Length: 198
Image 1: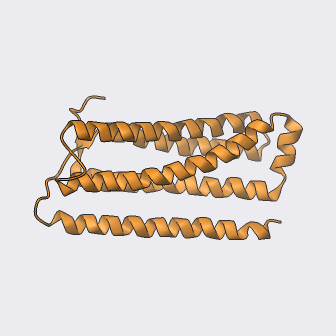
Image 2: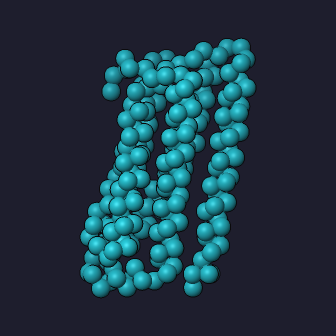
């Protein structure tokens, strides 16, 4: 049964490799365009720093969920999966708040290419987060349907279910690490605007 699910593992790794290639090309285009005319460095909204803390916390709660699932603490597993899902939603809200701050400070999609790249890079990453939230919603719904211990136990000893949870965890940790790398790259080139209000 598990071997039949190996194509899903391959698909996840293929998706991760494709995402790395997409963002590598975006960052290379950023570096090349930065040396051209019309480029003016901007400051990142400080809410991006808060969203980075939120996404880091979501990796921690997801790790707790996996540990709880492994040790048959299914109530704790449900709480941590739900918390991870909630933190993912919060990350999206904070990112859109950051975009709103950028627009209010005069940074738009057109005009200065520096602002355009920040919108595009963070926006494409946000699409990855949305996909991860769909996956999290699936395992959260499955967990909520199995509130009785015996139902949760039967679910937990089914190898395809374990494989699904592992793959979703792998993907979520990837998008978290990806944002850390992207944020560090953008922060290195732009810095934070500590004067923008939350």
